[in-house]
Image 1 (cartoon, one colour):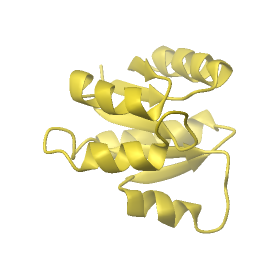
Image 2 (cartoon, one colour):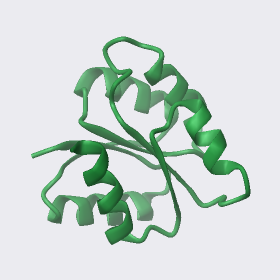
Image 3 (tube, rainbow, N blue to C red):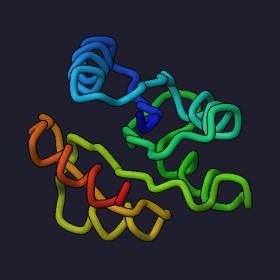
Image 4 (cartoon, rainbow, N blue to C red):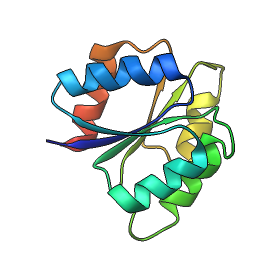
Length: 120
């Protein structure tokens, strides 16, 4: 069962996505801010990270760069999740070290497809 680190500060989004991913057969561990995301990445060594980019304490851009800068976690695929689907955001996410990018509101079939590609 692949382990996903879900990083999301919105409690409703976190709960909804955690339940839906669990039903799809993933083990889900959660972080509520960027600082927790970095700590959990080192502690849990998940198979994939879903990273909200607008986070308190430490934003998703910074957390991603820190995770990708460390030998133990640099190969964990990260999908950026953002409600700010502005022109250039995808490129910024990839430049920060994300392996893919998806927009909110989440379309679960599209997200699951991206997860499966990165886990294969």
